Length: 335
Image (cartoon, rainbow, N blue to C red; front, side):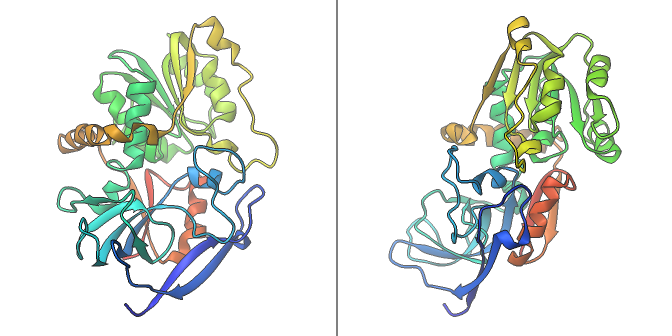
């Protein structure tokens, strides 16, 4: 199997915003698969806010990416050679294969997918970790019920767009918080949210009083910081706050800003709970079936922000997340 493999490796730990110098662009020889292994060519790479946390050397739900290691990333590959009984050349496989052009794997954590059932990008988005995160965060942790008011921050992102549409499908009133007039128009137009708040131009607390006069039953938090604090002031009795992410805090050079309004949880008899989607892995098939059904009936519309490029475009493409320039699931397409 001749040829070269282009990779992005972590050169140093970022301080604050990730810089080009934090990455190492490496070329190495492509190696054939050994016994019980398969090799593949990367087709699509998933870009996610959680990547920023993986770069810091601190305790988390996954160990940090090591200095000199290939950057961790979910991706879709096409199998090119195999000595593994579960994978054949031509198969498409999703897994955590890293930011590189070619992959050799023993199959652990790899899942064959059927590109005839959905576009490959959808297997990284609505039918991948983004969809699983939205589904279990909203339905299990948030325990939404028909008729409740649901507020979602980062609502125009990969998880937020799916979570909001699932909430609508469950009969909830849904309010999204996003970072531009265009994103807000998308939420209330194409995606069917009941209202949207532009946090860049609106007073979020005032807008929440207007759009959720009876309070928030479920707040699905993707951003943390000041917006989380604002939402805590508007909780309904027995509200649930779902801690999914905190993208506003990931590049902080100072300690993470915690919620100063946390006593609202006491006053409103509410609860605030974090979760990690990998804990629900035994139920991923269940979630995928329901999400696929909602897609088939048009109750979930897919928003995929696909950037065509090479592995070397990964560092700059990642910045779209932290500049708020992506809408829906961000994917780097190497085909």
